[in-house]
Image (cartoon, rainbow over all chains, first blue to last red):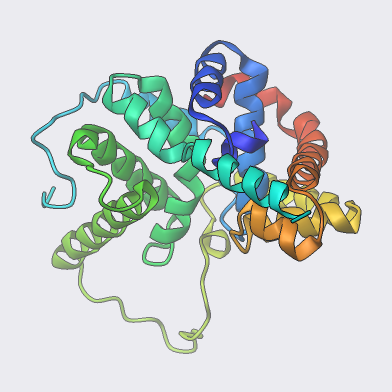
Length: 75
Length: 212
């Protein structure tokens, strides 16, 4: 996990870790905590714990659009 | 000659490793939503920090961060990798904040601060968070816990994680500065993260199932 945060894993190990996070809540928790530690060191806001979950709930209704460029759209 | 095997090993390590964001974006583009959730956790605070330079209300910041990630997910297939994903996301966040301000200004008269107010005060989202004092308190408690845990780390662990997280140095660069093998750098960074995370787990455990 720590190596993956820092892009120090090989592709096959990274893929395996991504798959593991899907089913392993302890690993997902570590992903969240390790990023929280790094962000705190960088002085970024310690935002509310349910923040990411609220984002994901909104994302559940969103589909990818291969014609949509967020940098060119004015929405 | 004696240092050559270490150098060769380091180079080989760099060649075989994969950039995490690139890997995750590729998985998202192939249809893996969970990989995007990982990107959200990875970048949410950075985007909140960027947007907070322009927007003060914590609720508005949260709304705009959500909008940023929604736009990024929707348009992920147009991301070609010409820049880093973090740079692309940063630009979406800034554009989203600017569009919001532009819309807001067109609807609300220019704000005139009342007489006597210190208009030079640097305001952060925390200082105007009168919407949820409990949330503010929880955030401060987390920040203080992390700060204390970092101070208690042995110097070599604190140095390693600071060089990595704050200075953005690679493991190889850190090994050069700390005059130790790359394997030792890996171990120190992991132990530092794990030591701080261990103090946070009891604090945040009640919410872990509501996290993601």
